[in-house]
Length: 333
Image (cartoon, rainbow, N blue to C red; front, top):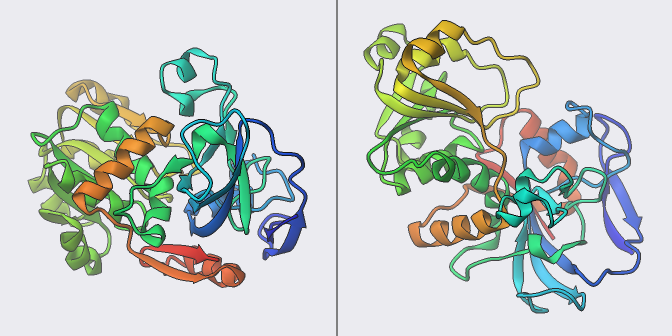
């Protein structure tokens, strides 16, 4: 039996729970969980904001732990090895996307805690391809949020070929944004932090921002016109995209990382005139997660965290809901 904390109905407090994972398949590993980050996506799943939650379920998909058992067909992992597990736990392995190393785009992918029990627990089983070895240099607590938050902000740099010659803006200095600033600086980019809160300026600078702009400062926004090649939108609430588009140079891009449930309102003429691109980014493949962790180890990128014991999960979730986490809550067994 695996013990954890389950969500029985939308918006309810989590409760202690045990379940039988059944017989281990030949392709699975069992991982004893030491740490699990609280991602804002967990809140969306608990509340069924996206209409995809299957109750009861144990949330959690930013997992660090130790392999305790493995199936006969697993490769590249050993019992006792430290691994990380993110949003995805499986894929078909046979479609064009899986064959090309883009398993995160597989139409038959399985999410770690959608239709399955996730990481707010003592252990978990997943397909071995999605248990990623963690470099020794990385601390488990600070690494847990990288398994979803980190790969979410890292992947666009690869997809869109962002290099040191580009100027990158980050909207929102929170759980995703503080990581995006660090990755953008590590890629060598000139980095602009965009926020509604002036109180974030000092910390944004400490995370790597060269410039800080208040999004409600009209003169400052006008002065920054056509100064950015890419804007990463990391907030989960509504964003005024029409006010951000003038910041882009021709051929610039806005990449949406924060998952708002409301429709976007974008003037087509603004996109057309500057040949601008509005796009989204979907976590990353296992290969990209390996690369991201190695990059983070080399560059000293760490999530700023607050760890709490796993039984205090509801208090930690309340803190995330109230936007009082600075910057990522991590549950610890």
